[in-house]
Image (cartoon, one colour):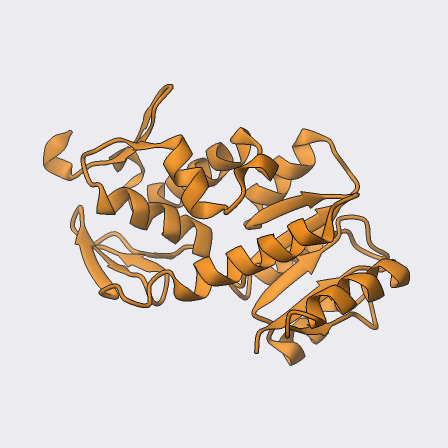
Length: 229
């Protein structure tokens, strides 16, 4: 049974979301002390985090940074704030998705299910190690290592890289990536994919691999090998 940590200070909404998710056999935990969210996170060790932006003491962005400094657990933002910069910020901090209030509970449940399925099942039948551009990719540990160093990717970043490498030297369309990452693209901004790919490329630049992810304007993205450049 998956454990979900719901970081929401509106008690009425918290109880309503919890009841809906419990109906789908998830264990749902909340926060007692919003000044020390990380203590609960460490104790629970959740499989997925749902977090509001506007919280007492510190906002959701702060806690997303803290969680990301310790874990690659999938994070879904849930917020009434609708400015595009909020979504961009959440993705840049490593969140996997952004759900705007008010929302349909069916959408929330679908996104939770899709994220858990993608994160914990996508590599079930795949070889865990792969070589690309002289680097060793460990799909199970979400790491990439070469002579320059080693980096750890989030689940979304690794999933995007995996999709691109599977079609190495071929263009993977934006629609294919969006449909593979998120079950219902009606609720996904086109900018969400751009932010995720840019974040992946920035991480790869740390070990001098960023240039091997190419953007094909109006089409999609392509992963190439060194000799193709």
